[in-house]
Length: 255
Image 1 (cartoon, helix red, strand yellow):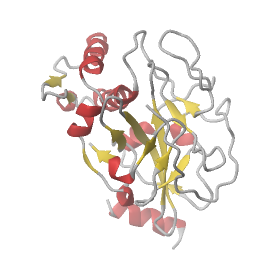
Image 2: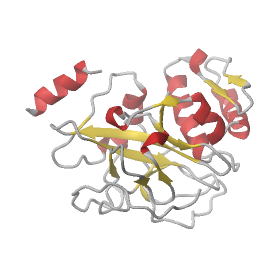
Image 3: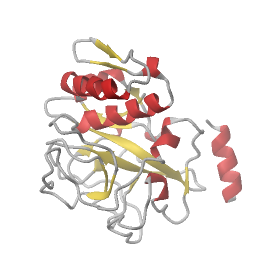
């Protein structure tokens, strides 16, 4: 199948480390830093033989590719200190972490989703639900100042356990940007699928981003088993081993 044919077909179709090996693929070594290289998520290099999964303009996946990256590839905590582990990140998003220890893992996912909906003026869709079923709906339109206060409240009341309940099950066969890998619990963890690429065989690779504890810059993580590449193989049978957490394919969720 040609590259053009592949793209046409796709448009029509619509916080503990666990030591387990994940699915690997033959990926040459990629740059270990985004400094002076990538201006946004969508500029990060695609592995040979793959193209980015087409995303409709105005979709969450399309928006995620436009998220800017910092030229400084260091991850900072909410209080300005450097994170102890500086080996996990491939690139760092240029998005505020705030000044309180609130925007951790699930919070970063909710931040990205909420910022997307806010920018699209889909204000009535900005709703998060806590673990007891209480809804936190945004009702103040384009008021950005109060929006930040709203998010702080959401971050304080919602987390991995509640977000896992709010999302619906997904499949690695149909993984797309904006999906979430999540293990609800105390502790739990959540990471967002930031981008997806596909080859002529229909095989997909995906990129993951996270915040962590304490609250810290949202960052694209490396695949520790793929030569510092940020790309992970979509495989229903293999665990997804990231630098600081391990998921199973059954933990994939969609909005």
